[in-house]
Length: 186
Length: 214
Image (cartoon, rainbow over all chains, first blue to last red; front, top):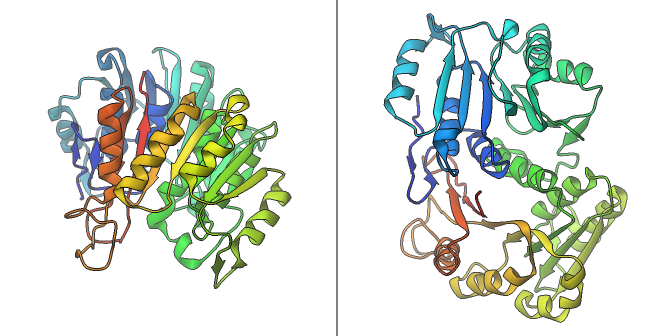
């Protein structure tokens, strides 16, 4: 795995896995206070969001919620507990809440969500269930994204789910793995 | 559903290493609800097309100003670039203004426009020499809106060997990078974020973004 290294002083990223730049700046530009992501994976987006929140004012008042069943391995390779330990060891000044819960059945009780990043199971039904679980907790200008939304058949679940849930009113970024993105209030 | 990009340009442009930059350049004006974008340097028209597609997503009429020193440029794939871009802008219903001449002079010549329409997104990508980049930043700054964001291209060259790139400054960081840092020194309300791909896998030149964080 390629760790994302960053220099907080210069704000210079050296690793640059796909989309990290985009996710990082999205958090900065929207002045996000509360982010929810589903799926821990290798912890890449988790660290991106935590580091971006940490570079906004009063990071101790900003929160990232990560929904993941912490058991076994992500992608059959990455030990989830090791990922959790690695992220925690970074001691980001923003708050990280690891919610050991199935995101399709999420019971969320945090502040209104500014960014919702769906990156757990990418099949159509899971994405629909996640959207249903979180939609009532979104800020009025919240941004909702689903990863892996363009390309192979397996990657069309999020696109189909967004198509149905938002009645076609969203954007599909086709670069890389694809990202379905919707800003509420449009 | 809107798809991006609508207009594939070249095979190179479609490669993944540019994906995140393109996506951010496309989404930034949308997130900013930008009325006016200004960019310096037309080049092959890649960023111009991205911004036009982006502005076309927004509801009311928006405008893109492209400052280019050369009166005309061509590309082997698309021919005369201004003609091609103009057609795309018309198809998208976005007002595109090509301002030819030295950007730091022409932007002043049309400053009456900026009294009515301040710039929400400034993209710096013309001549990459230190003095020119810094002059562009300082010249355009008074015309930026309160929510404006600035982006610069080619701040980092992974493969630079010091022999064939005129705007390199020392090692990997280019003159563009140092000009942006100098600008931030004089304007500390701006915070810079530099992103590169420095793993040697892609010759990706990196972008810098200036944001006034809250």
